[in-house]
Picture (cartoon, one colour):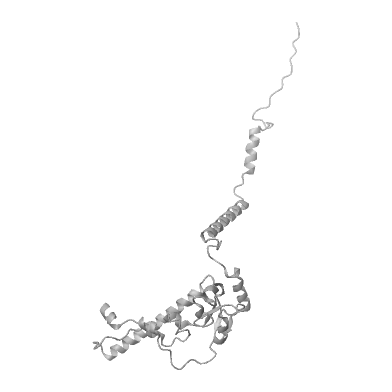
Amino acid sequence: MTELRQRPTATSKSSNGPDKEPTSGQHSINDEASQDHGISLLDILRVIVTLLVACGGLSYYVTSSESVLWGYRPWYTRWPVVKQWVQGPVILTPSQLSLYNGTDTSLPLYVAVNGTVFDVSENRMIYGPGGSYNFFAGRDATRAFVTGCFKEDLTNDLRGVEIMFMPVEDVENEAVTSAQRKIRREKELRAARARVEETVKRWTGFFANHAKYFEAGRVVEDGGVDEEPLPLCESAQQQRPKRSAMVEES
């Protein structure tokens, strides 16, 4: 009998054995798992920068190339404001303030309201020589801001200006006693003075909160005031309410 030779057969490794070689598919899965660590800090910074750039570009377009911060200008980004902050507030007398009316272009352009000096140099076309409001430059014309009389009342003297908010007594034989009339007048006088203060505060806030203006200092009196208060200008006198109209409304 011929002897049969048996060839040695290679024993396959158990599929569940510890010596199993990973397949190529398993390699890719493990690589993806090792690379998936979530959103990184760099990704967050990229998103923030992209949003800021987009917001600034939209602001630049909407504001007609004037601002990338939607009109907001921090004070420290404006050189005149920073310079004034470093130098400190100016203290001027009315005669000194008059030099800052725009005729000397080497000096700032100042407007004062109720003793506070504001730098309006960025609007020389309006407050400078030839401008429509040049009469306000270089002076404290608080009274004119209240009455609207830009020729007669270019002064800071507010004495008697509250009369423009007091009613004209045009009712004859009014059925009120002298005591009632006195009490009524006192109430109306307090209300009129409050309106003057409100108007002055509104104009002060206008310059203080304006995007182009800023507070530069104070103006102090260099002498006494006139003994007699100024008469109420014609325009302000015509604005006074009439007692007869007030009676009809009530």
